[in-house]
Length: 170
Length: 199
Image (cartoon, helix red, strand yellow):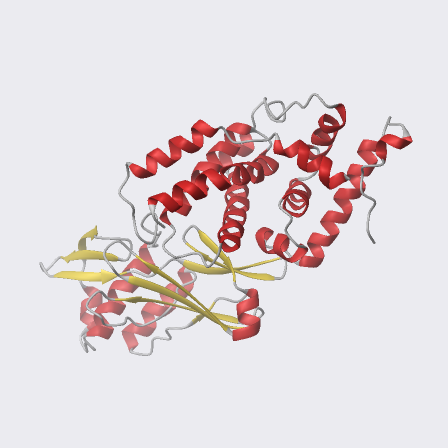
């Protein structure tokens, strides 16, 4: 990868990598660290990518891996920032704010699956590949995540306010 | 509806652009490495085994047993896969180490782990019965990891192709006990150079 190709990829996919890491780690400092690690891995990646999709899915997979690596680390398990979940976006829109908080309250694997599937538009198989999981497992995660989100957002809400929450698909 | 709102919400989650520019600047000021990012970990026993294997096979040396008794006084890492060992008799030997590879099973998937990189090889094993991973270190030594079999029963072969064009033998040491077995086999000339990576 040339310097120009790298610069373009970093500017194009920096946010994507950061969002994956944020979904896994729930704080901006760790997400920035993961983003830096992933982009440097991209810079040193010795092979050519077959396509833009190949590049994107490589970045998603490595971002998930690096985030997990940090989650597993001895240091982080004992030093989770007090600011965790407090330094994310604070949308003025109440429904967005509630949705953000509800998503961040999900388990890590659910958050990542939801992000890859709903934001990045990955298929179930692509999500499974990025997360090193079975497609059927990912389907279960998405089903449970949708149910949890529906339950969380339904609490204290008027019926019509829950209309944007997806219904679980059997 | 959910997807639209979710996307609108998460779109506001953005990396600091100055951080991205900082990373780009950092790479422009750094000489690009080829291949692996850093020397791969090689356990002491495995490193010794690699050195023995290299000499033993490249020279078909019948005196391998004597060589094994020789002490290594210093090891200098030349590159990720290449090192030079000075023996207590003054002899300098070039040793080639192998990519540190393993295959893990996660949620029914076969994951090849080579250094910092991880590859899901399940589909390749199912369709081709084989997956090859290649990495070149900074001195031009090519390390290859080949996994054959099925996701349920795999064998992992690793090799280094020397920079003089010769191809190294392949083997994989998965544990201390197997490394010991390997050394014993090498001494007796009955080295089993293939170790199963399966459970």
